[in-house]
Image (cartoon, rainbow, N blue to C red; front, side):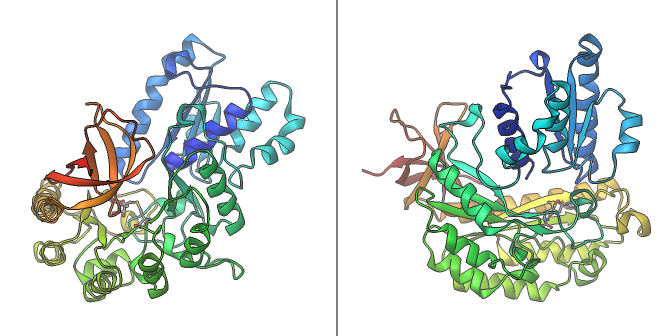
Length: 428
Ligand code: SAH
């Protein structure tokens, strides 16, 4: 979502006449877009921000804009005191404070309304920034902003505000403008993307939205993330199954395999319900790949409770498990009421054991791709000069070729597989 937000800011600034310098040292305006979902992300943001201070000391005209979840929707006072050298604070997904500041500085503030409509910020047309013009194959499109779910560990609802779906016509317009600029794949984003449309009776469901987007010429693949198990519908699954542009890849986090831990997290489902959901997804979408997120070391998680998570992953054999160690976030229910009592070494031990298990599982899953001929969409080149693409199931594939494969959707034959990537050659 931050990638999508950053692109929108870059696009807005370029329309005002700014351009990408490539290096912070050469810039007149520096925007730091931040994530604070875990302490490590926040530490990284603070470190980067502090490293910008000398630039500001050298060049007092430099404008520093702190953006994203570190700012949140009502956090500026504290931050202003802590980082007095920051000129502008912007909440997530909102370039307006920066645009306003720059116009004000240039004595063009009267153009604000016009500028914002012209930039169609968060709505409608999106002209891709120069840096990715003509080479962006896959783009993110935010469809649900904010989140109202309040999982006890999660800071996102506090920082991104209440859930709000974007109007379907804006999303259509954005997809069309991306397609005109050569984008072939869009990934629809929301903290709980399968709740799309639930906040407005006039909006379609996520399935309905995907069916509309399916008509956009030039867009060849549609993905979406992240889904919450409780909002996954058969209508959505059948849309994925029956509409060829909708990719058979579902990101649906479980977070923990034990019912008590799930309740403490306030996730709203049980281990059994999740297993049933996975069975249903697999039944309705043949060949589907499934990704999940897991937090180990949630407050009070015992060894046996953690073992339920291990067993669940071992049984379900999912394609991807994004693993995280619990990190208490200020202001969340778990940070306020539940002591962070699983020691760090123990969190690491659980993390590594799951990582090892999952590596074995995906190694096996990927081996099943060996010698198969499958369609791959090429997104760019790797550092080693090989073409990088993705299967329908979102697996990373590398191909050696002298041809220009950018944006091409081609059948390839897989000749090597590992836990993270596959190698293939273009099928004759
Ligand atoms: N809204 C999405 C994604 C949230 S952020 C969802 O709910 O699935 C991505 C992942 O970060 C989450 O799925 C969760 O596994 C992890 N995460 C969120 N808060 C965390 C915390 N306090 N400590 C550790 N991991 C966390």
